Structure formats: C-alpha cells, structure tokens
Image (cartoon, rainbow, N blue to C red; front, side, top):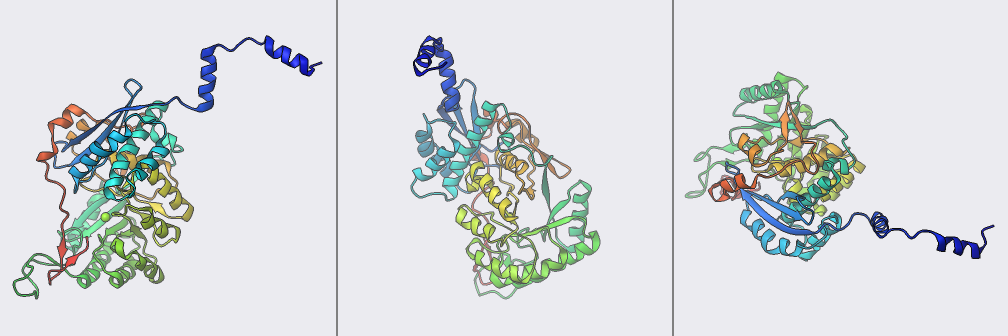
Length: 440
Ligand code: MG
C-alpha cells in the first residue's frame, strides 16, 4: 500500500536525473534555446541593372545560420540604408532571433511614431530575415511554418498595353499564348493614365504655362471602357482582364468609370481612387459590382482594415515590404479570409526578388490568395540572388529550400553598386492642361 511515508521513501530512492538530460527536459519545456542576433549587414546593389535594392542580412550565434530581408525603397534608398545602419541594427544586435512577433512589435514601438513607409521597410527587412532564420532552423520552407501549401503554385497576372485598340488586342492574344490566364491591359504608350492624355503642346492651355502631356479625367473615363469593349469583342471572356487606374480619378469620375466597366466582367480594376479618397468606395459599391483592388501605397492597417472588414473592396494590393513584412502580411491575409476578400500582393519594375518570394510564402499558404503581380528579372539577378522565384506559364514557383529559399551573393552584389543605378525617384508627376497636379 502506498502510504504517504512510503511515497516519500520511493521518491528518495529514485535515481537522480543526469544533469544534461535535466537540461534537455527543461529546454523542451521552455522551447528553443535563445538564438542571438550577433551581427547584421546592409547590402545594397543595382544587380547589374538600374535597381536600387537594399537588403539586410542578420547573422546569428549559431554557426552558418543567417537570414536575409529587403528594405527596398527605390525612391528613398539612402534613407532606408541610414535607418537600418544607424537605428535598427544597433538596437537589434544581441536580441533573441526566435521572437519574431515580439521583435516586430518592439521594433515598431521603438521609434514611438509607428509604421510609415520608411519604418515599414526597415521592419520588413528585419521580419523577413527572422522568418528566413526560423525556417532554416526548422529545416522547412517558411510556407510550411505558415500552415503549408493551399495551392500548387501562385498564379500571376501579366502586364500588357497597346497604343490603340488593335495593338491592345494583339498584346492580350500574345500574353494568352504564353500561358497567362490573368492579363492587365493598359491603354496608350504612357501606361498609367493612358487613354486620358492630351499630347504635349496640344489643347487649350494657360499662356506660358505647363506644356507637357496633360491628363484629362473625362477623356480617360470615355476611352478606357471603349478599349475594353473592343478587346472583349475580339478575345471573348476567357482571359481574366485587369486594369490599373493608378489613382488618376477623382471621386464621382471613379464611380462612373467602374459603372462603365461593368459589362466587361473585369477580374479587378485597381486603385481607381487616391488613398486620401477611399470613402468613395461606398458609392462605387452602390452602383456596380466591378471588383476593386486597392492598397498599393497603403502603409497603415487603418487604411486597409476598414475596407476589408466592411467588404468595400475585393483585393488588397499592398506590397509586403511596404506594410512591414511577412508578419503583418499574413495577418492581413487572415482578415481577408474571414471577410471573403482576396490578396493580390503588389510588385513593380523596381521591386526585388526577396520581396517577391516573401509574398510567395504568404500567397501559397493562404486560403485568401487571389493573384500575385508578375515581376520578371534578368539572368544576372539570378546570379546575385540565387533562388529567385521563377514564372512559367503564368505561375510563380519558389524554391522549397528551408527558410525563404533565396540567398545573396555578396561579392557579386558588391560589383554592382547602386551609385550607378538610375531607376527610382522621383516618381513621375502627371499634370492637367492648366498645370495642376494629378495624383499618381
Ligand atoms: Mg498599381
């Protein structure tokens, strides 16, 4: 019979657990041992092109274990470099790389004034590098840590444009022939705002004033739906068509534009309004069901969360770097999932492969995935950044290596300094006939 006295005797007779085993048991109870960030480097490169890329490499206390992230901001390149080198890195050295969530929040509050484009770029670089480290430590790609694949590859949309209706049809047909199912069509050689520009020197202008290309809203609202009418008549409704207004329209013209686009069954129209005028999405919802993609220049959750939770938009178009990395991107995707909204993470000609692959890991693991913007890189980029994802027949394929699955060849990156690069700021400012600014 096990009396209280016998119990204590039994316990006293039990062999003492060896110290190492006891330590292991304690470690299991407490999670992984600390992994200290012991060094960090900022690596900027033009990658042999006109890029202005800024990467962060975090080096840990475990031999050979490091992670990379991007703070790419083509318009304020030196500002993000300084913010990383002079502010984030001195604060980050010595901290525990395991604690991604805690580090993301404490890095955000560390500057008192939170978020914003520069802070988010800096947060994103740290956040992506920490996810890269965690994946490598686990021996798994980041998407496995986010719940595993929800699809076999990530569908991307192509970019095409035509100077007239016939060339737009040709461009759509060529894109379809390469395998794309989703195709963004812009009108006119000027890309954003194409179809709405009065040529330089033409039109009735103030004396001695602005003489360049001039944007005209009503002209655009007429010309672009007319172009899609022609394209749909020629190619049918099999391709999923998209169009980016790039915030060129004011409130009621944006509403009218979406109403006129209704017959062409768009996959989405993007940024019909400037971010300062998002209240107009309520009016758009009242007059049509043209799907809305929004958020390319958003940086704060207060900008995108109400649009998602009120179901005023259909796709979020944020850039992963611009909203602060994988940590906020996966949360945004979860809110989208709960509200029946989809993600469409933004790329762009000046964007980099680390941001693209960070988006890939969220895309491929999220049930809220809608589409990813394409971004093609020249071969030299694949040498500078081995593991850069590939697009084949309209699908983006990332590597299945542990972590983000991408690396940086530092010696090669150093051969291409950003001082020689020209792509980037200032962003083009469009103007109207009277010389006033048109929002990009
Ligand atoms: Mg856009």
